[in-house]
Structure formats: structure tokens, C-alpha cells
Length: 149
Image (cartoon, rainbow, N blue to C red; front, side):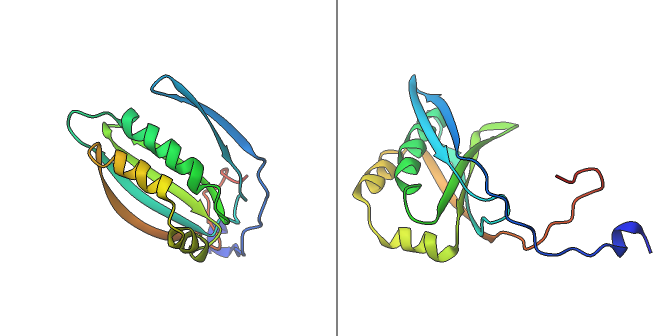
């Protein structure tokens, strides 16, 4: 039996991450984003893919995303959000929102926020959004040797 096969893996230990402040510049406007969470305690991820329409830019969408995310991330259970650009296609983005639980995200969705609705509508002609899905955080993770933290 190999060393990897003989190891037992249990639930990951939750480690509180410090509050992270990120300053980004979109369309010459500086935005400050605040994120906090737990390393393994994030229970759910909401992931969607964004395809930028011809004649528009990812930066146009990112501006709306930052404004909407700032509001959404104030909801109970919100644990941060990320927007990534695809390496070989700058018009494809992926957004990953971290939530304490599916019920926390569902509760946020059930409380209509007109500001968020208006922001999303303002970006409707800029992109097409496809929900990839809602994913549970794994209870345990197997990492290759030398990749332990």
C-alpha cells in the first residue's frame, strides 16, 4: 500500500482569514472591496460564467459587478466574491461568490434590492450570464505531497 493510500483524511480545520482589503481601478474609478471568511469554513460557492457581447469590454461588466457585489456582500452569510478573466479569451469571465450556506444565499435572493436589480439591468446589453451552479465546499481535500499548508 502506498503512503498516500495509507493516510486517513478527516474534516478540514477552519482557519479564520484576516479581513482583506482590495483596491481595484475600473474605468478610472477606484473601488475598495472588503472580503472576509474562513479558509475551510466557506460552505457554498455560487459560480457563473460571463460572456462579454461584441462591442463591449470586460471592464464595463466589471464596473457593474463591483457595484452590485458591494451591496450583495453586505448580506448575512456573504463571505466574499471573485471575478476572473479567462486566460485565452478576455471576453469570458467567471464569477465565484462564497457563502456561509445555500440558505444564506437563498435568503439574500429572497429580499429584493432595487439597487442591485438596476445595476444588473444596466449591464444586460454588455454580457450574457450562464449559471454554472451552486457547489458545496468539500469536507476534506487530498493534496499532492509538498503542497500542504
